Image 1 (cartoon, rainbow, N blue to C red):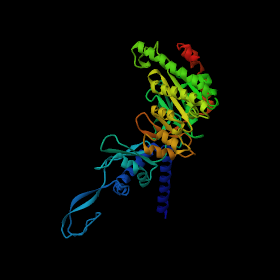
Image 2 (cartoon, rainbow, N blue to C red):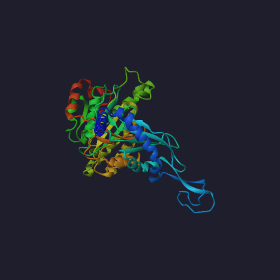
Image 3 (cartoon, one colour):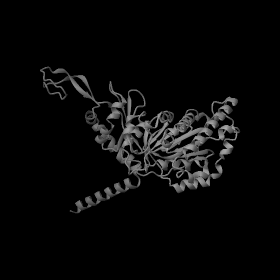
Image 4 (cartoon, helix red, strand yellow):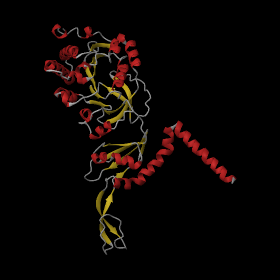
Length: 439
């Protein structure tokens, strides 16, 4: 009885210690104890999982048996020969799983006739088979597929990260891999950010303002809600348009500014402003647009010319602005082809895509549909209880689930006032433009 009591006490202490270890220092618990168990389980179950998910191939094999008909294979035909040729289900070769911060990854050798898309289609079935949060599929080279398994959702809580010290680069959140979510305008110049109300779209714009405010860049705002979103940040904005009529004039200034910088680069023999000497290099300019659809909506035919001017000017900035230091970040609740060909053409120029939770499938398709069908499925699965979660087309050519840091309006407003002295006056920026453009 005493021995049983001691054994029970030791077991309870061990279980409590393991729970505390997992609770207070999960990374070391995962690497030392959790991952080895999971890796063995994955390797041991791979044949059954591959067969259940339809990832095996039938291959003919010679088999020797002393008992006719005793070979376990599909399509078995009982014969009296001891040496016979049978069809065997062959699984893809699996390397040893490797640990990651939030799970594990493993490399597979694809079988003949298989593509990474076959594994992507089976990703949800793989996740359920192994009891993990999600499985992502990538292909580093032909004939190889990497399965990235996430044991638990890393985006439940997102802690703040240090600000990026590099120009035009802002850390706005975390990716599902645990890496920082960075928006780098030098690498990806134009971004399309879609999301319904309370999905985290405006919070992401706040994070951008907080990150860009202390940098030596000019910020220009287009707030088609009548100015209620960006007016509190006006001390840090060099220019702000709050209606479509004002947007037409401001976009004309941007086109003229771009043309002026073209001439400057041409005279200096430079392909872009970054090849110019720092003494004559113009200030980079980030354009923030809220409610993009309002630039294209037409109530009656009298607005047709105004919309055409707006659409053409914005598209020209998107097509030519990168080399001359003009970058776009376009936000909208609804972005659909029904807004006209101008939106579709603008979308093609925005290689950076961010899709929060949306109310209509067309907006998700418009934002992510030409990238990866799996990204579209993930975007539609974003729950309303997780504001800030989005599907991001990153600069490495892959897409990720991500979540932005929570940035209040008060924090963004404080950053705008603190760094108001860094905002160049719009008159100074457009000083070299002809009066016909700036008028």
